[in-house]
Length: 415
Image (cartoon, one colour):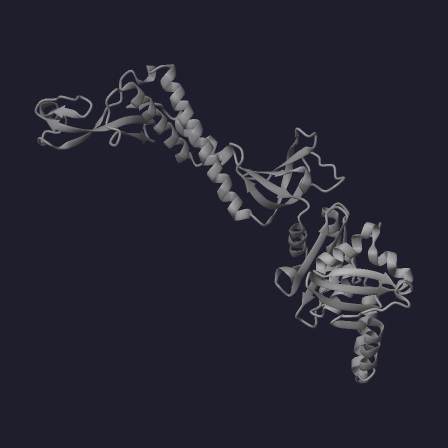
């Protein structure tokens, strides 16, 4: 056997500690490399039977081959004379097969070619082990949020930065399109990212993580809002333009829980944590409703809507919305951002016109539903006047509590 000593185990344990590659993978790679070097040295060998063994106690690696016991040896690599075999085991018989140590005495002097072959096999095995490790970790983490530290920033051929994040067992790469616009990333900073996809184009698979994915917002709210984590409050939809604004629709089946207030938190503490993590991105928390009229009007907040008409066109669901003249720019938003996010959130194509624009023109022709929201609100008010006095007092008290808390249906960071 060839004595390596304790260095092999020490190197294997160090590799396992630093790169999380199991030490047995490293030892197997060394054994296979030695076997490959032996096969280069020996012209005639039993490919199927020759193998290596490693003794962790003595630190020795041996090459073993099966040999058949014969009267007269014709192939020294596959046969052994019975007289020689009896010196090893006295009770052996002709035709039996023995596993014998065939490690050459000059194995350490095989030369540059054998060493190079061993190195290539070992490098390939380690690379394959690292690939498998990354794949296994990715499968367990795909579609989740992770917290890491920015390790380095690489400049790509197009001059844009690729941010590399240390996520513990593997590295995540934030390509330019997954970075917040205008954000400056610094080495050593802590960052939360969304594990998106695995690319296998290079020698080592690359894990792509995102700082712009809308699911990152969902994960952050689940972390900050216990009611979302336990299922009491449900996130129904998210629309995001990363770095600028996000709209999130929430709902609760528990009548005693205000889903919007739960997401905002006392004095805005919960939502402020999310806003800070997203570098002051504005977030609108709106109330989801199964009624598309209510949902669309909520999604267009903070603008006030007067009339909504729904159309079931062949190309998709479409709605026309009328707003007061002074609410038109608010409903559309800067560069159309508010209406664009509302359309994405509700999955309705939204056309907005002011009252002066629609004056004297037909409106709602061919619509499946047309609702004047001011009239709808008036009906709700009339219904509340029929409520018993105790219930009215309870509602008034609840209203006063809401006034005391700086919460609102549309949660937006000032400034």
